[in-house]
Amino acid sequence: MRQGAAADEQLAELWRDAEAERLTRMTLNAQKLAERGFLKVDLSIERAGEIMWTYTSAELYELLVVRCEWSAQQFGDFIGEALAAAVIDDPGRHVPRRDGDR
Image 1 (cartoon, rainbow, N blue to C red):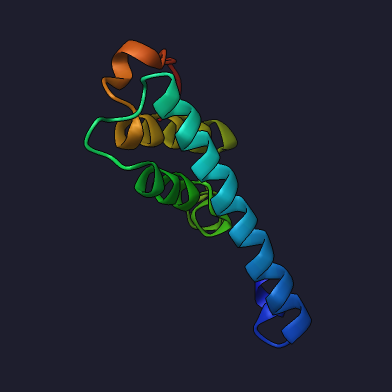
Image 2: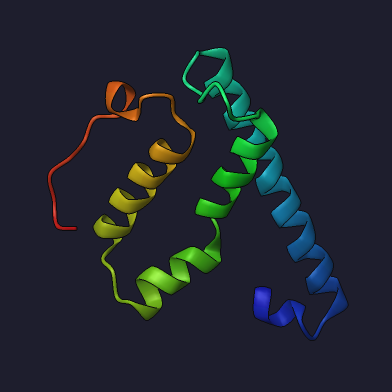
């Protein structure tokens, strides 16, 4: 859809709407983390939502899985660890680490 959006205004609008909805979902997720006391204290809910939105982008998946040939497991492990490090207060306390191919 992203590629088609460059040439078609209706697709471009659909892409913008989908991205805005994803940002809203990530911000709501950040709000839930904050309510449960997991969000870093120096990180706003808005900024945490933006970080989460970035890490869940199709572009990041494309770069690492499609172009760099990471496995789905490697990508999932990376995203989980990176998100936790970026937004969770003391991620080692809240997010169990898994052994696996990195």
